[in-house]
Image 1 (cartoon, one colour):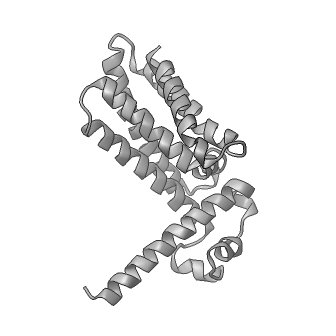
Image 2 (cartoon, rainbow, N blue to C red; image 1 turned 120 degrees about the vertical axis):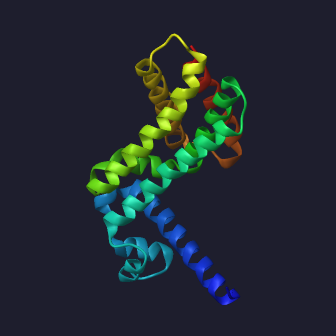
Length: 198
């Protein structure tokens, strides 16, 4: 493969990532229905119609954002489990992983909470399936820590933990700076662990 082809592929991948990032930020700020392709194109320096070279339309763009983040969560969660020994260490690492995600991707979390209904049926099914599989990663660890509790109760614990972690970064974003992130990480980690192991 020539350097020219490699450079073009890298540029295309970078543009693709920039579109997803800017679209997520705009969807988070204004809602899916309040954003046009022209708005997204303008944010990344291309025309609205040029976005069709990357995505079939605004709904496909929303699907790409939410499917990609769901795939990333599932893959990351499985990697955490496979690279740590023992349920306690796995739980700590998984909480750390999810807290880092929530701080980094607060816009995507807000879009998911508000605009899931705007997904195509196929993308909604895919996102829901990936989310269920991600929850099961947590259930596997929690069942080792709570062997006498059934999966339904552990599922409630996991979802409550996600609610705590996912909502906090967006809520406190205006009041915090990047330098405060380590403090936020520590608070969320300790509170999530306490909730999951209570």
